[in-house]
Length: 227
Image (cartoon, rainbow, N blue to C red; front, top):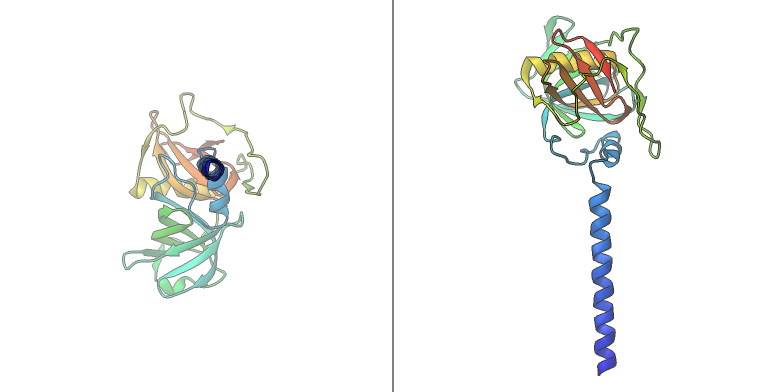
């Protein structure tokens, strides 16, 4: 009798330890290191959650892959798969002229602005035949690769008092202009939020790529730096 009770106690204790270890591993695999989030974004899934990863204004650019009645898919130049949900209020443009949803066809290059949630963007504006005009000072985007170390480098001017997570999330026209400027200089990732910093500039947060994760845009919507 004592032997069976001891055996059950040992088994229960072993199970509890295993559950605890599993829970610890799960928590750490979704930590704020960003590795899990970037990997999920690269597969088109939502990134790991953090204090600022809720749906916010952003966007992406890429090539249309497939089109359905109220959505389409596209691939960015860094290989990310993005789903774009359309609505009756979505605005379509070709250059500076208005067009319709029928202009979205397979193989077209588009810029999508709207609310980003992981690998899905609810479009407020779609610009057809959009081409990035990368400045000569902008370094190339480094696509995400599983297992590759995160690239750490700085280009241009980074605000002296900048700290990750600081600032106030913005939306509307301001967010759209900052997103378009960032994607013109550094196409390939998905912008999941735009933050106004204390110095009046904007930090455009870029996911799904190894670098850059933060693109800095001034009050005139010109890219001034990235890290």
